Every structure is written in structure tokens, then in C-alpha cells.
Length: 597
Image (tube, rainbow, N blue to C red; front, side, top):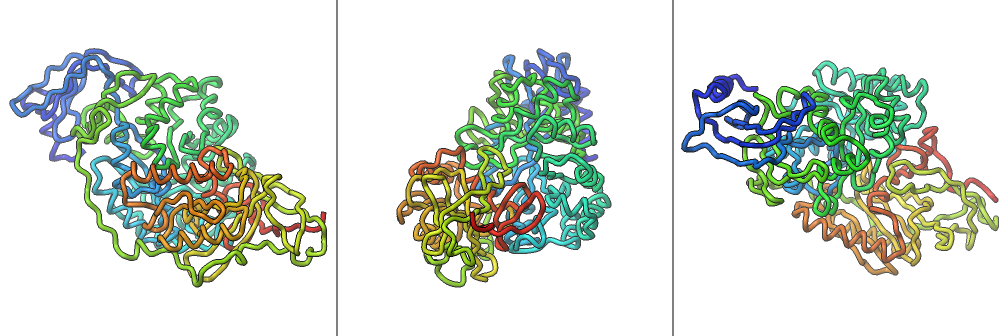
């Protein structure tokens, strides 16, 4: 708390000076004591809480703004403990604009998407924009760019020296999720240097342990310094992490639904809820516009059996204290930022009025605060570099030495709906004309990864199952975690080429092509990841993508996000990169065609 404001807060609390703003007659959701305190008044001065309680009568001057709560709940502003702005396909400003009316007043973002495209200057772009927002946006420095060295080629590399520089910037709260968990367990020198830098700066280190192995590799990873983890998907994952001193970040994003399984650690096993944090990880624009942000997560967690007050703790105080910000945010108490929500019903949690830093930021779903105007440099909108036009020929899967076999055994990526992991499938496929072709009847499509960063012309082709396509089609995206190359799935090579060329022409985005015709398109010119349009506009464009997938026969929930993870070579079991097919369980390359059946 700034020392120059201390006397002003004391004077208001003592009744010697008028408050800037007063909220009267609310039910205080006191997360620090676990109570609901009725008939509460809050006095605010200089954007911070001066006094709060059922027995205070602050001095109200001529300029004091008075808000009558009329028995509504007074809730701390919601905090998203781990998320990636870019996954919403929005800029920082437009993401913030979309979530303020839903009660989000603080976010902890890891911009490793743009870091994989532009490196340190991309991170700086995000940090500078974050600093200008009307709510709190803290940045964690991406720790693993690339996520899996030797197994993929990003657009840039973030080494220990870059980490040290970025950790010194204002607005940087910690080291982002350490995705290279095998590297930590193996004592990789560069990773250890990054972890040491975070400790030296007194910053929190984010975790990302995406393996089901809870043996020595898990313990070695935690010994490296990771303090939280959002990659757990089971009850056992939650229990193991809590016992080893980590904070369990339970995510409920657009496609990752991991709360239901892990919350049983609290609701059934009775583990201490103060060590659990709610987050989204990835939310696309349509989810924000149609369903909400952290308020959506709260409603879901409560529906899964959490006491509302406990759920609110997981989205406020627990998050703030984990990042060392308990004196600033996360609770309604003297000295803290006046980030306060007025809510009618804790079960069906929706923010009626949102205060951010003591100002009315939104009311009845409408934004009431001005957003910054941001101009982006030219380099940020030129990130798709292909040396030549792509054609159907580029997406053939030749049988090579197995051309004379009638059938071959193939290693195939299996999509798991609503989860980040994939399955490693082995599928028997027919060989025709010395090639392996998609097979609609067996839900076997092609997946291709095209280098868009360095203009090398590299195209890797593999197979994927789970999209359920019924026609000749393709879908493509320049948002392909984490290296964000150009990724394409399809059942027809010509449509795959159309998809690739369409995105090259608009500077990046997502597209769906049916029988050679574009039927859905989102243009994301900022790094091939983000649009500067409003969330409502991007949501409509995204709906065209989802409708396009459906028109092609796909019935997955958020298939565009499932597509974006097929190249994520740090989450088991099988992925594709610009270097080939990767077995993430063993961190080894595999051939797409294993051999004759």
C-alpha cells in the first residue's frame, strides 16, 4: 500500500475525512474469516478500502459517491490465477473489456503464445499493454520457449538472460508455467538457471506437470521449484500435488474441464480448500461473450458441490496470497484495493455491479470505464512466412518403403474431448497408389504442421482420429500451441491447401474449408494469434469456425481448441511438430507408418 495514501485511509476510517465512495447495507463475503456479515458498510478512499464492517458510519461529504447495496452480497473482485490472453484470440485490452462485466478484476497471464512467435519483444508488448488496463493484469515470464527443445522450432527462443531481463520489469509477477518437466527432472542447465533467477527475484514459479507418472519424475519436478500446477485432471493428481506443497489450480476453460474430478479432494476427501485455486487457462471469445469468465468457473465449481464461500475463496484470496499479493487484493479489508462486486445470488453467481480500484467499472453487464487505445507496431502483424504457395501435393502421406504393402500400421493422434492430453493410437490403414489416405468411415484424417516462422518450406504430415469428419474438408490454424506453427487437419489434400493459403493471405487465424470452399474464418493478424476487434466480433467469427466444423460432421465441443493442441509436444501422449511425430510419454520421435500390417 503506498505510504502517501496511508494517512488519508486512516482519516477516513477515523471519521476525520470524507470517503470518496461508500457502499451501504450489503452482506460482506468475508473470505478471510469464512463469514457472511450482514448490514455492512464499506468506505473507499483513493481506490482502496478505508474501513469495512456492520458498525461503521463513514463521513459522507458532498462529493462522496454512495451506493446502496440493498442487501446484496459484497464480494471481492474475481482473480484468474492462470490464463493465456492469446487463447481468447483477443488483445489484452479487448480481453479485459470482455471480462470486467463478469466480475474479473485481476488476471495472471502467461504470454508464452506470443513469446513463441516474437520472443522477448512480444512479451514486452503484452506487459506494456497490461500496465495500462483499468484492472490488475500481472504477467508471468514464459519459461519454456520452446516448450520442448529439440522437438519443435518456435519463432524465437527465450534463454536465461532474457528471463533475467524480463523478471526485472514492472508488472511481472513470476516465472510462467515450466512445461519442460522432463528437463527439470533431468537437471537441464538452462532450466535450472531460469528457476534460480525466479528465486533470486523472489517471484512465484508456475508449474505444468502433464504426466500421469506420480513417481520419482514427479518428485524431481517439484524439487525444481514449481509452486502450482493446472495440468491435473484426476482426484489423485490433486491429492498428490497438495501433499507435495503445490497449489492445485483447477481449470475450467472453454475446452478444459478439470474441476469436477479434482474438487472431490475437498468435497469428499476433506482436504484443506485454502490450497486450491480456480482458473481458466484458455477461454475463447465466444465463451466470454456467451457464458462469462471467472463467474462461469464459480458457477460450475458450486454446481459440483463446493460451498459458495469456499469457491469464492478459491477465486480471490487463495490466488492473491499465492502470488504474494494478499496485502493488495483478494479480500475486502482496509488497505486493499477496492475491487468489489455486488451480487444478488451466490449460487447463481453473476456480478450486478463491478468496482475496480474504487471506480464503477461495470453495471448490469455494461462497461462503465474507458479502455486504453493501443496501436501495434508493423512487425507484430506480419508473422506468417511461407516461401511458396502450398498445394495438394504437399499434404500427401507417402508409404515409402512400405508402398507395396496392402495395409500398414500407423501411429495416430487420438483426440480426447474436453481434455488437453491425447491418446497414442495404432491403426491399420490401407495403402493405395503408394499412399495412405484419410478414411471417413473410420474417422481417420490427416494432420499437417507447416513452418510459418522461418520460411523453410517444412511440411510434416501425420494422422489424427476423433474429429468425426463426414465430407471432404479441412481446418487450419496459426494458433498451434506452443510453437504456433500453421497446423491443418483434413480429409482432402486440396482443401488442406486452400486452408493453408487462406491463412497465409490474411496474416494468420483459423479457417474451415468444405469441399474446397471457405465456410468459416477468423482473421488473427496480431502474431497470427490475436485480433484487435471487440470480443463480440471475434465471437461471431469464431462461431463461423464452430459451425464450419459441424457442417463437416465434427461434433466435438470446441474442436478449434482441440486442433490448436495437436502440436503441444509437452502433453502426452502423441503430438506432431515441424520435426515429426512425437511420443511425449517417452520424448522420442516416431514414424507415422510403423510397418506392414
